[in-house]
Length: 300
Image 1 (tube, rainbow, N blue to C red):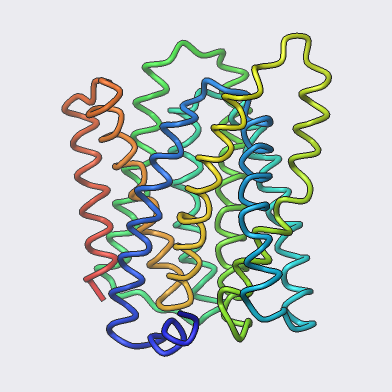
Image 2 (cartoon, rainbow, N blue to C red):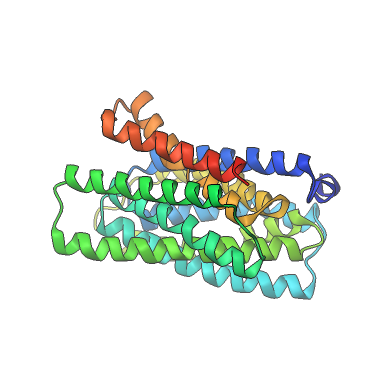
């Protein structure tokens, strides 16, 4: 499969595959959000997920892919540090603000910063229609966050700190997207980078979660927590692995923008399966997000 992925790099078929991978990542990210939905301790959930996908990736890394080169090892270590900071900020953000408020802010900040930085790092150029799509999508995602702010009974001081954290977390999404795209392009075998990334990314947060769990007066039951970890681990492998492969095959900025259609899929899941009300205004912004993604993909 590695040779097939490498052969598709820079081809029309590779572009189509990247589109499919980015949209798959968006759907799975929305499913992941629906599983969390702000009901569970984000530190424990993150630790259970990391431990799960680390154990799943370990045999692949050890036995099924070539070993990383010294250069790729260094890239993986730096990537691990970036993701640790990102996950710490994410957990702090979700602890301070309602999921429906901070999640769109995080997801709306990421693609805009990614497109700007990718233009410098990878010399990617967007056509005017694509820029219009980026602006429409980003503005609509932030508008959804604004609607959700009005719907939530929130402490204003706590809300401000949560939104600031969400903006910083969104910037970290852009940083790790750019850096991991650089990493997978630097690796001779893309699955070497992916397998070892998941193994190394799982080394820290499970221990943080374990310490937190032991200090809780009323810790949650382990079986449901571990089950969420396994389900979330499978989703993370497919979602994150898919989007990083997409950045190997096509423009990093386009893949990042398409992934943020996850806010649309999250709203659809909430409407269809969780019986949440969408409303005309939310539905309108969902259409704008989808239109922006279409312009980014086909406006070049």
